[in-house]
Length: 181
Image (cartoon, rainbow, N blue to C red; front, side, top):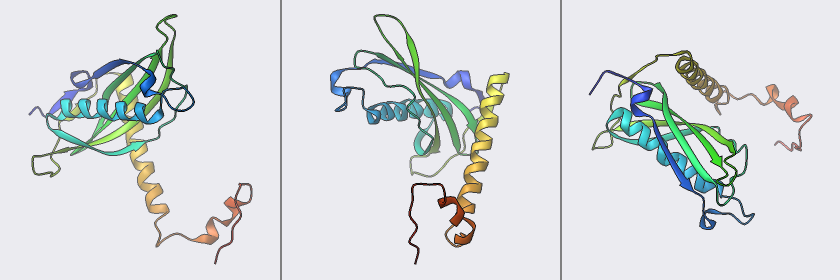
């Protein structure tokens, strides 16, 4: 296994025609179906980079920016944005294309943390990431910041450390009624 690889070496893209069987009750493509495709492409990208089986550890922020119509071509693109010791952050971008007009719209971007596993299910090291341009560094830095923010958020709201008095005022302008015991 190589010690370092560029994101170009493991980029993956897929395009699929959205069919009526993919739609929800509102007639749009079901978000769960899109998430399934996103997870599949993140898996393929991570496996290609690590040359091993990978599992999804977490998904960071999934915003559905635009609806996907039945009959659209849906293109998903994935690349490695960050590598840790045994984990990788895979950036996934989703675009829908109207096959009649050719108009494309960005529908979703998300970040999947994938972990490489051996045949016994133990975490194994992955190749590091070679960053070759400003865009790659931006993606890497963003992943590091997200990782640090998640750690701070998790420790800040740890059940044993949480202090109610510090957060009561947050409810003041929100759609909530506190009845704490």
